[in-house]
Length: 222
Image (cartoon, rainbow, N blue to C red; front, top):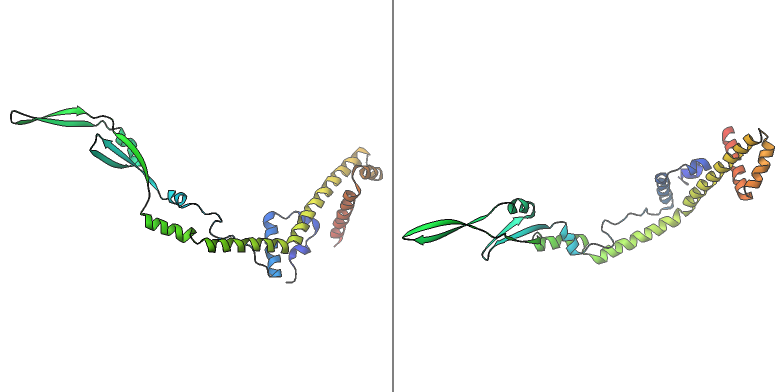
C-alpha cells in the first residue's frame, strides 16, 4: 500500500467523513509513513497528592464521649441510629447494707468526627507504585508529546485537505441553494439567474461552485 484510500475519494465523500473516520485514515497514513500513533501514558502528567489519593480509601469514624471516661468509636453510617437512642445512667447507693439503684439522665454525648485511612505503609506503597516514579512519568509524557507532534506533521496534508473539502462543499451548497432560488425568481431563465449569481458571490466562491459542479458531472459519467 503506497497511499491511503482517502486520496481516492472525491471532494463530497471527503467532506462527509466524520471525525472518527478521519482518525482512522490518519492511522493508515501514519502506518504508511512509519510514524507511531500517539498513545497517552497510563499515569497522569500531574498526579494527585498522597492526601488526595488516600481520600479514595478513607472512611469517617465518629468518636462519641459520655462524660469524662466512656468513649465509643462508631462508623459514620451508624451514627444517626446511635444518636437517636435515649440513653440513661444507672446510679447506685449503699444504704443499710443494701445497694439501691436509680435511673439518672445522661447529658447529650459529644461527637467528634475523624477521617481514618487503611494501614499507612501499604497505602503509601500503592501510591508510590502508581505515581512515585517522577522521572519515568516525565519521560513517558515527553515521548507522548513528541509522538503527537510527529503524527500531526505526518498527517497535516490529509487533515488540511479534509477541512478544505468541508469548506468547499459548504460553499457549493450555499451557492447552489441561491442559484435555485434565482431560477425560480427569474421564471426559469438560467442565464439571467447566473448573471445575478455572479453579482452575489465573489470569484473564488464561484470557482469552487463551478469546479465541484464539473466534478459531479464527471462522476455521473464515470
